[in-house]
Length: 457
Figure (cartoon, rainbow, N blue to C red):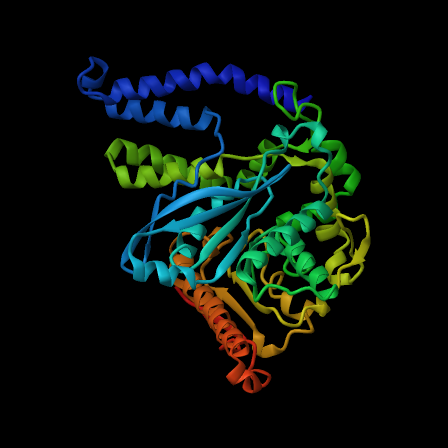
C-alpha cells in the first residue's frame, strides 16, 4: 500500500514541479516582466529549488564521450556486452586514430568494476569509471531497476548475484586471458564469494581483486547501517520494507525493497548535511555561481536517482552479511546455475593479489570491515596484499571526488599495473621456446610494494 501511496503522491506533485521549473525560467529571463523585478533572482532560485526537491529522478546517463589517455583525447563508446534479466554488463570501448596511442590501449589491463546494488544506479561510479578509462579497458555491472523486470523473468537471489559475477569474469577472461576486479561497497561480499568458488573449482581467478569500503566483516566498527540490521529480525524487514510493484510498471506484482525507502534512509543518516547543501545551492543560484550550482545538480541527479531491489536478494543480503556473518564464519553455501550447492572458501584463493581501501570517516562501512579481506583470504601471501586507509575520506570520497582522483586512483593504478605487466611478461617468456626453461622459475607477478599504506590529503 505504501508504494501505491508514494506513486500517487509523486503523480500529484508532477504538475507543480513542472510549473516551478517554468516559473524559475520566467523569473530568470530579464526580457520578461517577472525577470525585471528586483527580487527576480531570489524568486527564480526558490522555484528552481522547489522543482529539484519535488521532481522525479530517472536513471542518469554515464555521459562519458571522451577521455584523456596520456596526452591524446580518445572517444568513448558505450555498449552492452551481456544482457541479463537483472543486470547489463556494460563496456566503455575506447577509439582513436592515433596509432601509437591505439597500440598502448590494446596492451592495457581489463578491469571489471562491480557496482553496488544497494539503491543507486551504477552511474554513481561515473567518476570511478572516468579515471579508470585513462589506463584500463573498463567494464561495469549496470544493475536494472527491479520494478521494470517482469515477473516472468523469475526471482533474483543473492546466489544469482554471485553467479552473474562469475559469468562476467569468465567473459573477460575469454577475451583477454585474465582480468582485474574492482568492487565498491556492497558487492565486496558477493565478489569475494564468486572468486572463492572459482578458486575452489580450480578455475583461473582474476589477477587482482580490489575491495573498497565494503562490509566483508560487518562486526567490526559497526555503523548505523549495521546496527539497524542487527537490532531488527529478518521478519521485521519483510513486514515493514517489502512492497509489491504497482500496476503501472513492467514488474507489476514483484516484491521489492523500494528505492525511495533506501533514499529516505540515506538522507536520514545526514539530514543536516543535505539541508545545508540545498541551502547553499539556493544561495549559489542567487549569486549566479554557475560552477557550484552545476556541481550540485550533477551530484544530486545521481544521488536522487534510485532503483528497487528484488525482495529475495535484499532480505538474503541482510541475513547473510549483517546478521549471520556467513562469509567470515565460513558457513556460506551458494547455489550455482547448475543447481549444485557449494561452500564459499576464501582460503582457497591463492593466485589473486588483494588490495583493500577504506575511508577514515566512512559512516556506512566502518574501519576494519574491508581490511578483514586479508585475514579471510589466508591463502594469499603477505607480499601480494595491500591495504590503504584514506584519511579525511568518507564513504563516497574513496571512489569519487578529489581524494579518489589524487590519493586512491594513483595507488590502485600502480597496483594493477605492477601485476598486469609482470604477468604479461611471464606469459611472453612461456610462449618463447628458447626461454621456456627460465619461465618455470619466473614469478607470476611482482609483489605489492607495501602491506599497509595511509595517505593524508
